[in-house]
Length: 431
Ligand SMILES: [Zn+2]
Ligand SMILES: [Zn+2]
Image 1 (cartoon, protein in one colour):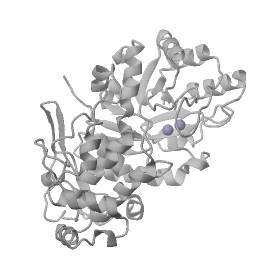
Image 2 (cartoon, protein in one colour):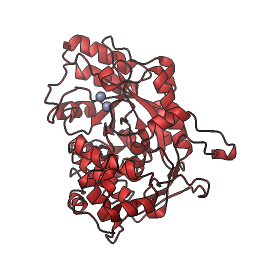
Image 3 (cartoon, protein in one colour):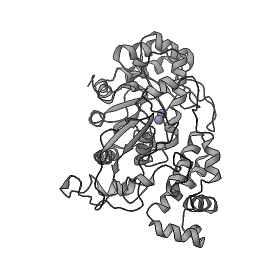
Image 4 (cartoon, protein in one colour):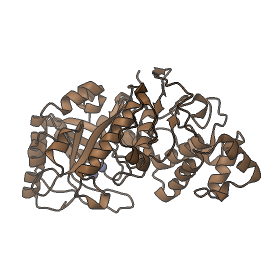
């Protein structure tokens, strides 16, 4: 059976090297799956330096943007010895891998972002340092002199550098099993994720980090769907910023082995009148578009229905995101569901081939079960999305898969069980 879940840390997952060694390390292009564990080796180099890719010496698409975007202002070359925090037999691996694994496991448990950031920042700090310097600082006890490293992250780095799996990681690994039960089979059939955010809008990590984590989870694709301009609170992307982002996505993909693709997307706001909050020209340039309501959620049912129908009928719309907008739990409080004629809206989705999103975030659980069953009975397509705002949240697909299984939805009606080319064909069919 094809496996694409994050139960096991891949034995050779992609991992950034601390120094840019592109000149001496040949590009390797291979990807294979075996024994139930995804293995990929990639050469990802969004460092903003002239890398001579393709042998023509051209710099990456947008050097300045790449510099600003990348958390790691160095190369992301993959080396076998720089991968998972523990070997299959449980021995410790490198400090960066350990810090990153801790952050991932904390995120999927929805721990507080600020605490998680400490581990990501520490990884970022030591990544560019030569191994020898890290070793010397471990021995001299001077890690905390580096900005971004505090006592607890220094302890983790020290353990990892000394070949010890930190207690913190040992504890977290106990939580590494499935986040939900009942949807395992469907989860294993999901090939990607259509809804994710980076720090270009309101996500917490660079798009490269999101892409790498998606690869580690065994995805074939991830659609990057940062917010649209009018969602200012979420730092929505203007056409100019989106244009720059597309250049970065292209540069990232050029450094991948082709077995994984970061797809160009947007979570575009459905405006009050049902139009979409991005220019048609920009929407045309994307691979896939999720359309969602984020404002005036308490609008009366009649205008809300009209608004949503406007979006669903728009040929640019592929996925109707978190359709009721409800929040059922979590630190943002709760929020009731928007009122609209669900039969009319889902009927239009079925007619136009727009997928109804099953938003996996536990605080959303959207659509509610009754509406999910209605959409099922009306013949809709679905997508099971993480709506991840941090790398570890990409693993939340477990929740959506469990709900879809419970609702008895045929996997072939879930568009992210499809191969990339079938997905892309569907997403451009109405343009
Ligand atoms: Zn949203
Ligand atoms: Zn979103």
